[in-house]
Image (cartoon, rainbow, N blue to C red; front, side, top):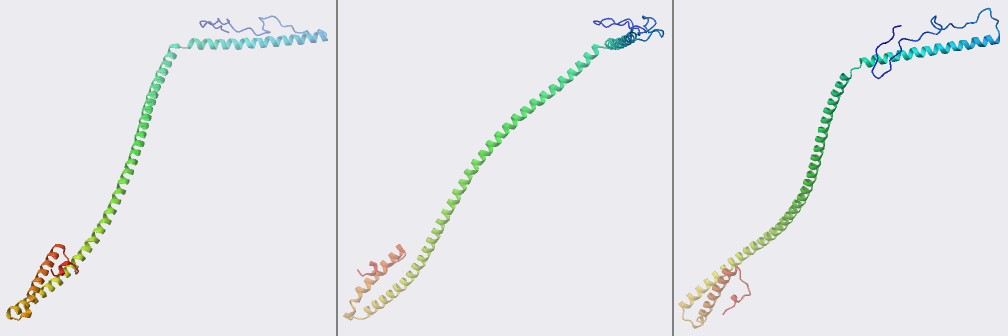
Length: 244
């Protein structure tokens, strides 16, 4: 076989070729018992020992072949290895990783700002709700006070209406009484006129005392009219009904 001549820096140079197969014509001649020898225990033991040695040599040769093939493969792979390409790929991967990291960092910053903004908005909403609740309670109190005042005003209006109704009834009663009084005064005045005419037409002494009576009645009627004009009514037992 052709020996491997390429070497890798830092690695030991491989063997010039694979080891020789035991039992080969170039190696030492294997001892095999002759058919002419007598078979005894010693020769049998020697034969078995020789077979064991041959198997050991075969296993050792196989191990050397595997080691040589593995070493050759490693040397070829290490020679074909291009560190610059790998470094370039690693740089590209590193740049991509940094880009992704920056993007993630910006996203985290944006999320943090959004979280702060949301927290501020929640505080503002809570404060606004509290203020609105206080304002609503104040407005409710004001509305309740207004309704209470309206009820009070309504009661006052009803009371005033009752008073007005009573006053109207009083005015009606006074108008009726005034009409009656005017009728009475008219009759008195008519009687006074008749009495005056009768007194002037006769010289009877018995009728002379009626003139002061008529004058007194006229004075009473005048006083009654003044009381009615001032008070709107006149008491039936007042001093205006008494003669002076």
